[in-house]
Amino acid sequence: MTAAGLQVRIRQRLPGGRQDGGAADDFTLDVSFETRAGINILFGPSGAGKTTTLRAIAGLTTPDEGRIAHGARVLFDSAARINLAAQARRVGFVFQDSALFPHLTAAQNVAYAVARADARAKTARVNELLALFHVEHAARRRPRELSGGEQQRVALARALAARPDVLLLDEPLSAVDAPTRTLLLDEIDAAQRAAPIPFLYVTHNHAEAMRLGAHLILLHAGRVVQQGRPLDVFNAPQGALAVRAVGTENLFAGRVIEQRPGDGVTVVELAGARLEAAYNALPIGTHVTVGVRAEDIIIARARLTDTSARNVLAGTIKQIILTPEQTELIVDCGIELKVSITAGTLAALDLHEGSAVFLLIKARAVHLVT
Image (spheres, rainbow, N blue to C red):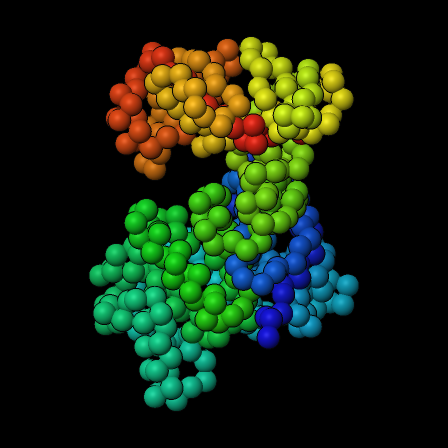
């Protein structure tokens, strides 16, 4: 039997700034969506309204108007004056930090959330959930004795202990290292399949969204700008707002100068370069916004001839930006392009500021929106 979906249609004005980041201006959240079976991803840049949406669903904040329901069970309806208290909503919540009770052991933290069960049943439920997230060895440890990954595993177990109807996850893996994140993604996927209940998972990490999501809801500036399979949304953002919301780092003004339907190609001219995109039948002369994600660009030290990439641009590295998770290059190819690579690639190709390079971009990685 398919689990009932979560239906959200809310409007909330937040004067003086956003609750999940962004500038200190008035901000209006105005979203409408329904979850699908499996894990649903709420995706968008900081300040898009992701955390505010979760807080409204959980009953931690009250929208100005709208309706929130799980199946036939109404959690909030401004017109009908229904507003269930957070503890009555049967909604689990996993925060960015584990928010565990520091004076309780891992097992006691999970047991705290088990509702109305005798001692034997409660112990069995706790053991089941600790085993699901592979932290049964840490049952008697307190949070300060756990690693970051172990803390989040216990937090996930605690959130499911009360058998909620819906589970909300607010960037739960943002504070764990990459190897632990990979393992936790598998465990979250397994937990959803075992439940099964709607999971609404907030992230701005493309890899997490692709790994977990059956359905992606794309937010930008408090609005839903696109929905669909993560691969479809990331590969074909619809409209300039969606292009920005998926994290397209390279955005340029351009103009369609040639159409080659036989080759499946549309050629656009930018201020300083020409790019071939997938054919789209736009009239010659149409002004477009051209977007290319930094991670969709391949870098090479020599010009490659045997490649499927339609665009090969010669350039020079102007800047190298090192971050904890990746390395970004600013490459001048007539236009300045941001390129995302790994630290290993930087070393293997012996890249430095001033290095001559070639950038390879497939036509389908060049997004055109009018």
